[in-house]
Image (cartoon, rainbow, N blue to C red):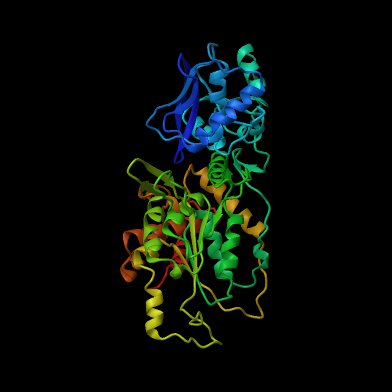
Length: 496
């Protein structure tokens, strides 16, 4: 019996699969067993054609391919090469620690598959891995750490490599982007630039603070005041990314069948308010699909027209906003997705949008305004650290700052954070880390005590204040949070 290694995906995790082959004296047939999906069952025809095209003769035997463990669902065309080699090399000695991936063309050409990258990335995070893959896959796989790659262009070349024990080894690559501290990469490219935003100085400052600390932010203002315009520009001033974060982003992109992008630009997701709960949070009765909150991890999740999202969606946001992860449970599986994103939201002050206007009359009744505002519960609003009331557009408004200038301030603050050995962004610190890094001066503590008494602040609100104040202090490279930093953090608190 021949055994070769392959793997399959279960959520974001990779599960090792053994491809077992047996030839039995019986009526000739070719079967694949072991909870194989239709894409794997179809591999029989691809494998047959590829082997026959390369001179392999099927023996008059009953051929059975078993994908073990048999109780694990498996899918993907990347099993083709392992199945073909298990037949072509039957009786030959093969490495027992080498994973084999690749899709076969009918002529035996080896092709890349969208599932190879996320599988190998997941496997390599646990231990050192050796893999044999198509030459087409090398370009994106060579960036993965803890991975030794061997390759071939065709099935014939792969068979000869195993028979002769001579494998072509791929060279590992490094990211070619500007970096700081040797391991954090960034890109000075601003397709959407803050220089195009006129006025709105408070909103720009709040956006800078949100970017520094990964704080959730809500913009409220009349239609056309620039809420969406500013929200879409935050993505390009976010802190640099580590190689691990870039690879994780690429892994998520591969689930969407997108062309993998290794650029250090953080993801931006903007679902429409009519999106279903499953599309935003992930789910599915069979294989669990990745939702918008997981796709936005380490980037921006933008909800435009926030009150128009369904109540179920808004309330379900509590866990990913507070905990930084989302657990999707089904009968046969439980998948945990990381959800450490900046939640950026925009809304009008009332249904007609003119409540804050000095020139336009609001057409809404008090009851309509109350209903509109009551769509957002206090627990959700309590998880948003920065609230900005947008001012009306004025003819005197001028551009005052560029994205490059703001980005440089974010990078400087990021370096300051890392020098104090802080791993997580300010907005994502847990209670123990808040006590460690958010140290207040006596004057700042006095202001906080008065604010707690005056505004009846909850424990979460106090923690959020300290985190925002820490980001303000980081912009000035201040070791401790001073009175002025805390006062600015208080100015962004939502008034009830």
